[in-house]
Length: 287
Image 1 (cartoon, rainbow, N blue to C red):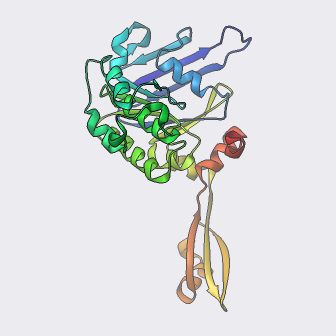
Image 2: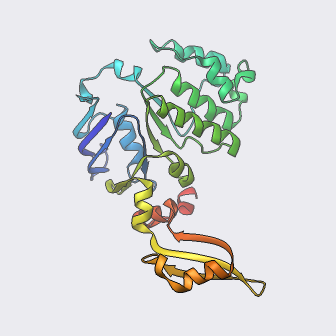
């Protein structure tokens, strides 16, 4: 869907580039995660891809055509959900929806979308009376109103309770299953792990890693196996090298003779990888 080549960008008042020659592709039908600490260039890159920022250097193609050659027809094919929901607060939910429906040639079934995110019963309520979570859910509906081929989602589940977050994640998966493509940024690594086919880490305007979550966890993890078992009424934890584990006599004996409680590989988490690659903890980011 997108091919980005040697992308660079500098804000007018800055002395140095914010984006420093990045290259990546977003394949059709995949969910592509774009991760990095605050100020790394995530939002700037997204704004360039959706044509809000135009004075970039390098080349970006969408469906094989230079992005600069597209006019307003480009927006018929993309849907965007910003991190901070933006709505007309003195209009009802339905009035907001109807306003945005008029901007597009293709219109989705807004009743079905509103019911899916649990807002149909509140369709005649002023959006100014909505909670933050309700506004986020309305934001997602708005992003899907034009039946886009490409979705840009910025922190889509931030502020949602677990039930509504799961509904949204299921909608994202279904969108991909139906042929859609997704570009997503989030600090909630469990969401990224559950959703993304590939992820990229951007640090100080440069991409440091691009791969599948599985490959990254294997690369950054330890090839060990932790075995926890019961002995004399107490839990005992032992760690073994994964290489030739099937020939490790002590490990095999413990499996056969002890009450095994848990077995875990040394696979790391995306949160650990985020910290290793960026040097910034997600706790710092949230603060």
